[in-house]
Structures are given as C-alpha cells and as structure tokens.
Image (cartoon, rainbow, N blue to C red; front, side, top):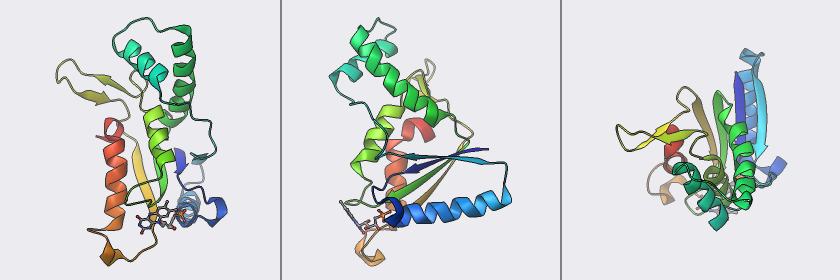
Length: 172
Ligand SMILES: Cc1cc2nc3c(=O)[nH]c(=O)nc-3n(C[C@H](O)[C@H](O)[C@H](O)COP(=O)(O)O)c2cc1C
C-alpha cells in the first residue's frame, strides 16, 4: 500500500490539518505496518508554471502534434511530478481552509499533475475525459478558524467539494 500525503498548509509543524493527517496516518500504519507514506508538501516542491508554454505542450499532447523543445522540457517537469502523484494507492490530503477554498498552491499542484496521457485521456465513445486512477482511495483532513455556523454548509464538505471539483478528472 503506497500512501501519498499531500500537505497543503505552509504551516509545517504548526499546521492543524497536517497534525491531524499525521495522527490519522500513524493510526493507520499501526494496523498496516507494510504501508509506506510519501509526504509531498506542495509548498516545498518546485512546481513548473502552468503558463502559455505548458498549455501549448498540453494541446500538443492532446492533438498528437510535435511540441517545441522548450515545451517538451516544461512538460517533462510536470510529468515527473504527475508520476509521483499517480503511483499512490491511497491519497491523504491535509487541507487548510483559505477563503472558503483551499490554498492556491494546492490548486497549482492539481493543475500540474492532471495531465493527459499520464492520468486521463479522452474517451472517443463518450467524448468526456476518462480517468486512469480508478482504484485509489482519497481521505482528507481539514482545518479552519471560524465556527461552523458561519459557513453555509459543513466546512468539511466545502473543502472536500473543492478538491473533488478541482480534481474531477482524477476522481470523477
Ligand atoms: C489566507 C487564509 C485564508 C483563510 N480563510 C479561512 C476561511 O475562509 N474560513 C475559515 O474558517 N478559516 C480561514 N482561515 C483560517 C485557517 O483555516 C486556519 O488557520 C487553519 O488552522 C489553517 O490550517 P493549518 O493549521 O493546517 O494551516 C484562513 C487562513 C488563511 C491564512
């Protein structure tokens, strides 16, 4: 069992969502000592910009066209991060709530790892993206500051919906 802990808080040891995820993982590992945990802090990894060069590379892949050397180099950086992401059996996201959503750095990470040819492809039959990550599970821990009654709906659901919305190509 390969577990990928995606830490979305810049708070390091002071992060409440991170501490909750670590407690969850420690309990899980107590029952599954053969599982391994790879912790990926989205604030520490070198994320390539998802700029015009990257967009052109993405469409070159989608249209089976040749990309320029510059586009290929930037695409290769994204593919390396995507492959680290794709290899997990269980995803654990630790999520701070930021302005009723998640930190922008996590959105950047999701945009970089969600790549055609790496974890999704178009289905000719349905004309919608088909996800290649089908059996992995996803757990989330979330932290927020203000009281529950101030949020329209459950805050956990807000964070989870944000993850599902951003990662819909991956988790349907
Ligand atoms: C930029 C920013 C935006 C925030 N937005 C919200 C919010 O919309 N709702 C809320 O309840 N708390 C909000 N907070 C407070 C955090 O959710 C809270 O400090 C939480 O503990 C952060 O998680 P962490 O400890 O894992 O970093 C915000 C904090 C920051 C820094």
